Amino acid sequence: MHITASVFINDNESGLHADYDRWLEDLAPFDAGSDPDTGGYLHNRTGEDNADAHHKRQIMGREVVVAITDGKLHLGPWEHIFYYEFDGRRRKRILVKIIGK
Image 1 (spheres, one colour):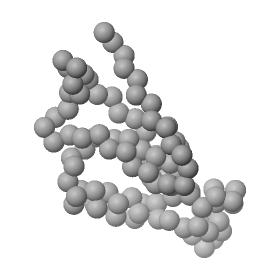
Image 2: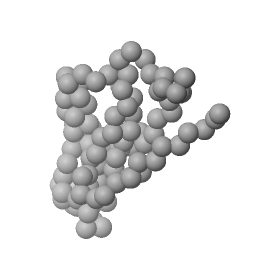
Image 3: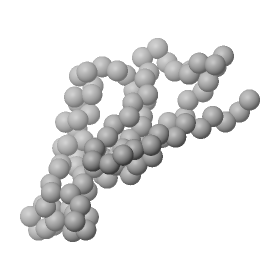
Image 4: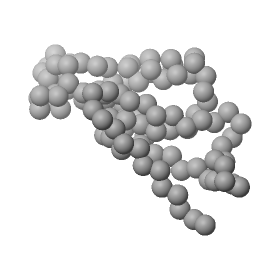
């Protein structure tokens, strides 16, 4: 439950995680500057330097929905739930909500 963190489902394979890191950095590179004429993010004019983290979270999403069957998470054979933090400076909370019988 934080604006610069993502939760998603995918394969737990180290190459894939490295690919995500590289892909996300290509799409939204870290730039602590706030001058858009030199590549900086407008958001960083607020005194923050985490605009890239907001963009990365937007790309990766903020929640997952998973069925529970016989008291166990119903995931595919290669699926895992991941939490990615793109701006690790703040305390975080995770909310798990179970709906149904």
